[in-house]
Image (cartoon, rainbow, N blue to C red; front, side, top):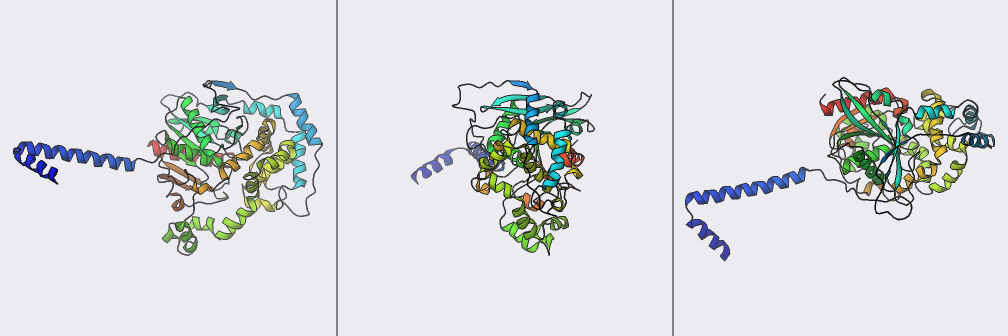
Amino acid sequence: MQRLLVLKETFSSLDVSQQQQILIGSAVAVGGILAYKLLQRRKPKVLPLGQGWWGKGTKPMSEDDQIYPFRIQTSDEEIEDLHARIDRTRYADSLEESTFQYGFNSTYLKRVVSYWRNEFDWRKQVDVLNNYPHFKTKIEGLDVHFVHVRPPPSKNQKIIPLMLVHGWPGSFYEFYKILPLLTQNHDGFAFEVICPSIPGYGYSEAPYKKGFDSLAAARIFLTLMERLGFDKFYLQGGDWGSLITTNMAQMKPDCVKGLHVNMIMVARGFKQLLSIIIGPYLPFLVGLTREDVRRLFPFFQKNVVEILKESGYMHIQATKPDTAGCAVNDSPVGLAAYILEKFSTCTDLKYRDLADGGLERKFSLEDLLTNIMIYWTTGSITSSMRFYKENLQGDPYSREDALLGVSVPTAVAAFPNELLHTPKSWAEPRYSNIYSYTYMQRGGHFAALEEPQLLVDDIVGFVRKVEKL
């Protein structure tokens, strides 16, 4: 109190001009502090990058950060071993009229395997895979594989870097149909595309230590983009790729110009509960559209019953991946049945009622078996399955990234046959800057392989909107 009186007397003893200068200076200082506080509030919270080492043994003092060309190869011995294992397959007979309701129908499986054994040319497909440049680089103790495709040279063309991230049981090969579409000129711009393999998938080395989750993959892919010289870029992902790219946007929002996802998972709270109760009758009151209602309801049947029917693999892989992995890593036919069943049901649940699972309605056996061969020849099925355990050991909705928003411009391509539908109103609390939300005309989980043109059109439209092109 006494100090305040002294200050008051001192201030009163100053002439008017001095008093005005002090008042103006104080106002500027207070204004600056308030502005700083306001900017800090507006500045998006960032997910900590963290650090990791996933290689064998202890972390060395330094790591080779060079990028090396990589070429996929095969051998007579590899193909002969595959054929010998196929020839020794012991099949289980399917039940009469069971279609795909019990899993992969063994009658149709024999047809697929016959094609694989007698007509499929792995050497030819290796050449197809090598049509695009492949590379490897060491990050956090692991050899990380990626495909890097530059657009053809063209005058007055803006080059936009784009990373595509796959999920399970897919691979970088899922994107081969959209690579030529993305790298062509889109009225003044084209994409330079980077497709990495998640560590533990395909030609990326598998982690040797426990705990490699989507956060670790996101950090490694951010390091990869930095190593390639990109400080601003776009991201696209579905399945695990959606979570990994979301984490990348949370870790370095200043680097990610835009995030495009074709699968989205958000925590469900009171708002979603209200939508479920009121949505079928008064959707506009809870932010749902007629299309949301068509895709969501009847809610219990579509979001509980069907998910329980189709998520058994997830529970196995999230608990004891190595047990199931031992079987499918040793049997090529078992591996094919395990993976291809997902390409059936995740494309359209109605395919469960077909004797051939509808597999060849949207995909060619050539493409499907090429994806299988990437898993088989690298022996990576078990390490790929472990990614479920590492991400789902605890409550995924209580993880730090699940509690943090995404501030970068975001686009959602909602395909009608995706296993779970997330309305825009449900996504907005987490993805606060949705530039584009598209109800796609057709398609399911493996969008890039199933509907390449639709997916590319949505990506191009989104980037054009962000870039104001």
